[in-house]
Amino acid sequence: MTQALSIHNLTKVYKNGVTALHGIDLEVGQGDFFALLGPNGAGKSTTIGIISSLVNKTSGTVKIFGHDLDKELAAAKSCIGLVPQEFNFNQFEPLMDIMMNQAGYYGIPRRLAVERSELYLMQLGLWEKRLQVARDLSGGMKRRLMIARALVHEPRLLILDEPTAGVDIEIRQSMWAFLRELNAQGTTIILTTHYLEEAEQLCRNIAIIDNGRIVENTSMKSLLSRMDSHTLLLDLAHPLQHMPLLPGFSGRLLDDHTLEVVVSREASVSELFARLALQQIVVTSLRNKSNRLEELFIRLTGNREVAA
Amino acid sequence: MNVRAQWIAFNAILWKEILRFSRIWVQTILPPMITTLLYYVIFGKLIGKQIGEVSGFAYIDYIVPGLILMAVITNSYGNVVASFYSSKFQRSIEEMLVSPLPNYLIVLGFVGGGVARGIAVSIAVMTVTVLFTSIAFHSIWIVISVLLLTSVLFSLGGLINAIYAKSFDDITVVPTFVLTPLTYLGGVFYSVQMLPPFWQKLSLANPILYMVNAFRYGLLGVSDVNVGTAFAAIFLFIAALAWFALYLLGRGHGVRS
Ligand SMILES: Nc1ncnc2c1ncn2[C@@H]1O[C@H](COP(=O)(O)OP(=O)(O)O)[C@@H](O)[C@H]1O
Ligand SMILES: [Mg+2]
Image (cartoon, rainbow over all chains, first blue to last red; front, side, top):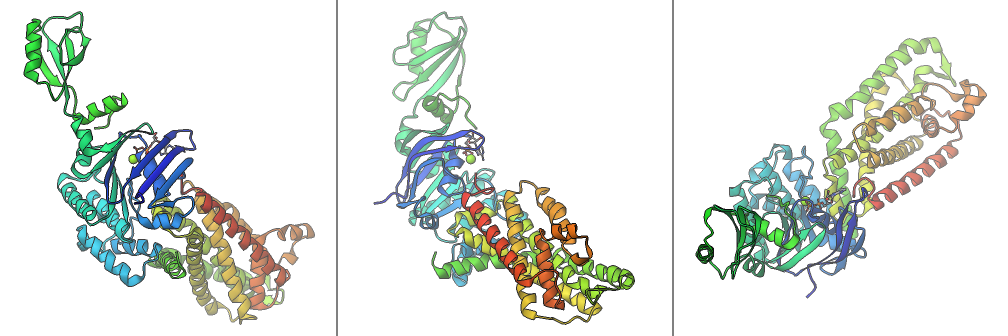
């Protein structure tokens, strides 16, 4: 079966000389719910921009359901619904007009356009607001308006660039439920996020992008299974000169009073303390080094600057 | 997109544009009526009496065609430059860019909006005109075709200006420093035959002169230039600007990074 999205050796150098993508490859199967995870500035929006032809690529190929962007642009565009990161509708237009115009640009006849506009505004909880101008909506509602708008031509592939940024928890949950349902009905979904939690809740497959490179591309399950370890920071009562021998644990001495130890899934914290006791090392306090996402990034990228 | 889908898409842009300027008619249709009214009162009634006849017409009658065309030029240009730039500014232009809409339909849609504004304004201004003058159409077909072609030409100009514009200042520079002077020097208020030979020759390089005179011919039956030449010049400009606008959009200039 053709892939919903197939990217090969894609590069992007912006006019100011910034290389945002260093030749990435990406495959997303039909019906998948796919996450593109990465810190700010990693190149997520650039990738999405190129796929939806808002950004000119520098080199490489992009195919949407087999339609090459360079050869069958209109066919490729018809398959995609885009929910961009930044609001991009006319703030002074009523919601219904925004929906109808978008339908018009896809050549959808008026009657069908009205039907779908009403349907999706209703499904996204915007029915009451349909005659108001977009400016009057809250941030979460604006985000949902863009989802409704992206669905008006019933695309086979829905792409959402950081859809839950600035959306409160409650709305986030209902948005997730909506996307899950849409995916269950057959729409392929790609979302970018810098929250691992979001990807974990929703997605089956995941690619991690950092500094314009794909550093990991795997199933959510296998990624999570590799994350069942955590790093502890131990404050020591007495200074140490060398990293003590701790069979079964890896770690390092950060300074003479601080020990960093990775506790894997197979090992346990009490085992670690038993080992330390054997060497008469006294621990005054301990803390978790960071959250899982941060650890994951550090392991994959060596990059410590991870956005929260 | 098939032909039917393209027709739907074109209409979507066109009607969005028409709705936009109709909603704010106090800012779009009313001002040219008031300005023209003032011109008639001041230049026509008050000062015109002292000027006497130009090319065999009362001064107020002589300036009617130029005043109407001036309103059409500023308004069709202003409509497209403001609308396209604001859709760039608000990023709503992306709604069109992600859709399968071909570029030529984007051009046609916005130009269609500018032409609609030009026509609406010319009707409004002509309504004011009949209150002050009693001129008849010398050739209605020339009047209509010059009106349409002029608004097409300046809508394209406004579009190109908006494609290049990076700030709101950039959309006022051309109208203020190029369009207005060229219009005033394009024989709206005088016949170029009143100028010394050197300035007459120089005036012939001004494209607006041809439109004003062709339009004057349509209304009054007099012109400083050959009407055929005028039409040829207008068509040439339209072709060049249309090609250029399509070229810029094709490259994504100003709209794609
Ligand atoms: N229009 C642009 N011009 C120049 N550089 C850009 C532009 N957009 C993004 N960049 C740069 O490209 C890199 C990737 O940005 P982006 O794709 O927006 O990342 P993300 O969406 O993952 O936060 C960043 O270094 C950013 O500064
Ligand atoms: Mg981004």
